[in-house]
Amino acid sequence: MTYNHDLDYDRDGDREDQLSEEDVVSILKTSLRKEEEMLKTYTILAERIHDNDVLKNRLVNFAQGNAKRSRQLEDEIKQNEETH
Image 1 (cartoon, one colour):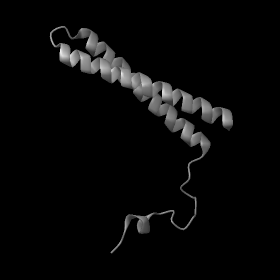
Image 2 (spheres, rainbow, N blue to C red):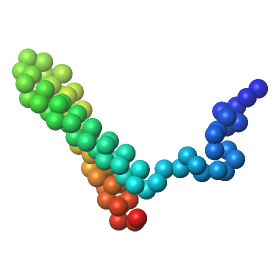
Image 3 (tube, rainbow, N blue to C red):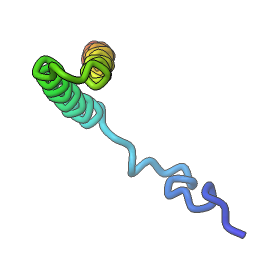
Image 4 (cartoon, rainbow, N blue to C red):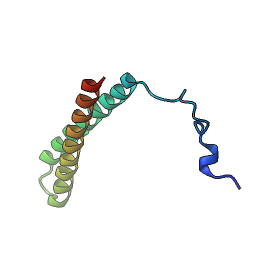
């Protein structure tokens, strides 16, 4: 029987797959842009809904979640840029 850890491509300790700090920051910035775009989309959509309070509330909650993740990503980016 083969287990997932037996198939792990860096099981031998070789780190050829390791991301550089620049790659990590770039991926985080891309994720931040996506979160900010979804935040805008949910906010605008919620503002345009007038006949479905349940949906409007869920969209506001989605936007708040995106705002929280955006702040977390900003903190991660800042921390990564300061330490490297």
